[in-house]
Structures are given as structure tokens and as C-alpha cells.
Image (cartoon, rainbow, N blue to C red; front, side, top):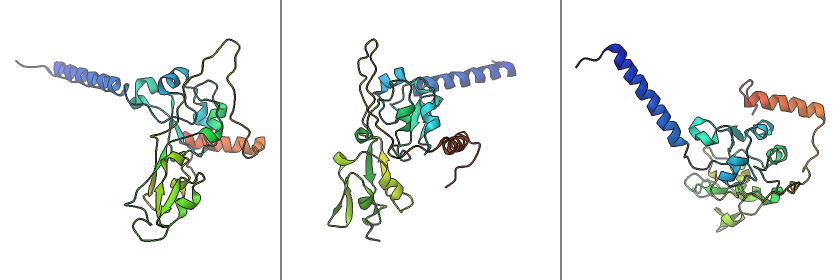
Length: 231
């Protein structure tokens, strides 16, 4: 049986569309994505997040990006966190207009857990007595085994990423895993009841309006590819 060229193209196009639709529905059931500090549990987060992108726009280290189609249909437009870039500045929590991000203090944030790659670490490879991560860790989550080899204490780690950014090796000897990140259950809301804001004051005074405005424009330009990010 012969098939006309038009019929063949129609069949091929239908197959491609069906495959794409199947792929979209498949990724729509993808696992929970890394979220900003203070995020609710995934189901509650998805229902509360308004997809306004404010947290993404205000993020100075560009640690947040909007989820795309291949992150799952239900996730489109929600913020996805690059844990290694987050500096826990709390701006995303301050700017969030909904309850998707709980107004918690910085001390309660747990972004994940650091993982030391012994096969890349200068100390573990005995190339150098490097103690940079040990000295940089603000929570004393890294200890030195035999006064030389860095070992992580997961129960003390909040995933702040300082050790990752300070690590001198390339590729990095320390990675930040989202596993162990602290997520929150939604609180019951009552009529005329406002959830408590416990974020606290700024660690450093905010800049004057002119400086803030220039930095804001620069960040947005870098975020949306209008200019290159300066090292």
C-alpha cells in the first residue's frame, strides 16, 4: 500500500506532537524542585505561589530562576533555587507578597547540606594542608580529622554555601546538596489574622535610593540577558 507524501507528513507531525504532549505530562510529575529559603512544603508552595517573579527579580546573586516547561507543568513560573549561589540575604522572603515563603529569621534557614568530595579535596589528596572551608564555616559544621582532613557534621550544616564559594579547587571540592533543606507546613489562616513576620531587621543598612535603583537596573539587565554579569 502506497502512502502519499501529504499523508506521511501528517503522520510524522501527529507523532511529533503526541510525543511532545506525552513528554510534557511526564515531566509535570517531576520531583519537587529546590525552592527559596522559608518555602512551604511543595504542594502548599505551588498553591500559594502567585508566579509574580518578585523574588527572582530582587535576588542579587541571581540564585533564583523561573521554572520552565521541562520542570513540570505545575511548576511553570515558580522560583527555582541554585543553592550554591544563595547567600541567604532574605530579600526573597521580604518581597514575597503571599504565604509561599514563611517570614522566618535567618537563623532558621536550612538550604541543604554540604558534601565534601574527597577525591578532589587538596587536604584529602595530601597536596596541601588546606583549611579554608574549616575556617570559613560559620556554624562549625566542618571539623578536621587528624587535624588535617575536613569532615562534615550534617547536623550543624545549614547549606549556606560559604565553604563552596571559598573552596580554591576547580572543580569545587565541596558541593551543596538540596537534600535536607528545611520546608514548612502552611499555618492555619483565620479571618483578619496576619501571619507573624519574623524576618528581622537588615544586617546592613539598605543603600540610598539612587544606589539601590542603579543596582536594581543592573541586576535586572543581567537576569534577562541584556548585559553580562561582572565577575
